[in-house]
Image: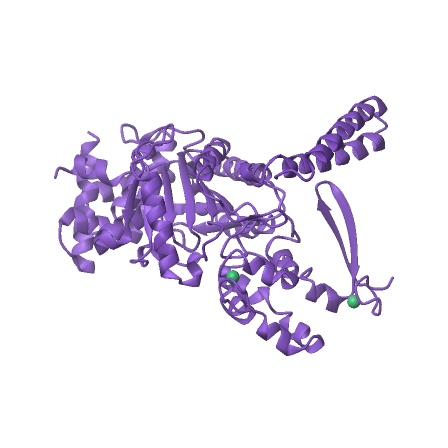
Length: 178
Length: 354
Ligand SMILES: [Zn+2]
Ligand SMILES: [Zn+2]
């Protein structure tokens, strides 16, 4: 099997990710796995210092491929933190940095959070109903798949109705203030 | 000041209440990292903006109450003497990092010291909640309520994909650090900690000694906490931690039964010798004090030592730290003097029991 990312080398790293009950299989070559942060994140008892130094070991590889300038000049336009500073300190300067450095974050988060990149926990009330409903929808869709898999069709029909209702609610709210 | 009054001041009131499984889990803590949406993080060093956060917190939350957490008081680092700051650090109410932030750092502390919020530490807000014993679920529930109370007024930095945004990538998502403080003397005595710690680490949890440097855990007190904050719900993080802690509790109980059976009179001898040292010493270093306190606490939990209160371990571990000793002595103490004062304080404290 070829690596999903570069489509060149043989895939030697196989990884199953479970997000919200949804299984995704990932097949990468060693180089790509390293760069995408799929390797080494389960290291034993990393101290924060070790974590920081191990967060960025792939940067050199990135630099070889992409132009060195783009990473170095990448700057958060709200607080002025450069990607280089973020890299050295391991700390963001403001909430906007998350957007400014977005394209580099998934590998870092995977490394630190056992392969996870997406928040599934609490949502502030002010974010409003839609995101909460969206989450609920994802949950129900997972339940539905499980129920169908278990051949529990009566319950599945109920869940399907709930999903339909929730989708209608979401459509009504669309365009409204979230 | 009498010793009793000094202790009353020094020990957070919540510490003296009973909790579930508190022969092994001394306390449970939940910490939430939160930031204001429009303000650069404390890591940016933009002091003007951070001062505004401080002023806002003072204006909105100083002297306010939320349910059981009465009368929050905002204490600015700027207004504290170095010794007062160290006392707050030794009570685990603030971090050493916060105590260095003279211009912008503050702590909002409830009257019973169960809830505290560090302002402008690494994040704008670090909300902390302590419960005695093994009470992580309750602690999480209450911490969420407290978080909602702040959120009614504060626009938090939040992203649909990344969750609560924090200075450090290690806290992003839930911003949740859940931890327990455990007393594990029997697992330590039977040399099982060295095997257990890597096993727990493999499950994405962190184990460290609470007092002492490096791998050494003074007083056999360990903290176990989650490492992952992203991609798991708050409830799952706490449930996963709880199931591991539950297993550690069972292992410790089994090890206690085993040492009781195998060591018998030898164990009793060790425990009562330690009790004898604490009751009679005139000079004692913190390391020896911690070992003896751990033994005595084990003796209490095993029913060997009666009429000494369980809280003696956590209480004296805190009280015999340098800043408290100096506050009790009302002067700066050199290391040798400290050992003398420590011995005095421990003897007097044990006398209070009779
Ligand atoms: Zn590849
Ligand atoms: Zn920024």
